[in-house]
Image (cartoon, rainbow, N blue to C red; front, side, top):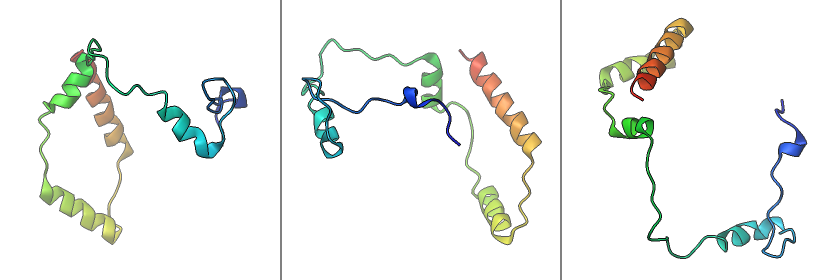
Length: 101
């Protein structure tokens, strides 16, 4: 199933003079557009959400025994998926992340 319209597709890469680039030459054409050195005045700032995600302050711990139990259940074909519990936890996690903003 395709989503979107063919007009939404990106145009093929072009050279500096605007002529289309052949498929094999696309990487070389794009590489020439990248500056050789970074601008010393360039500054990047992370959003508070990104900083929270990178800090790893979620407090989640790795439970090797639980992973082993789940892996064994999957191998044996006895693992049951509870979509309601998954949905509830996704919503709770999203609410927690949004409340930290």
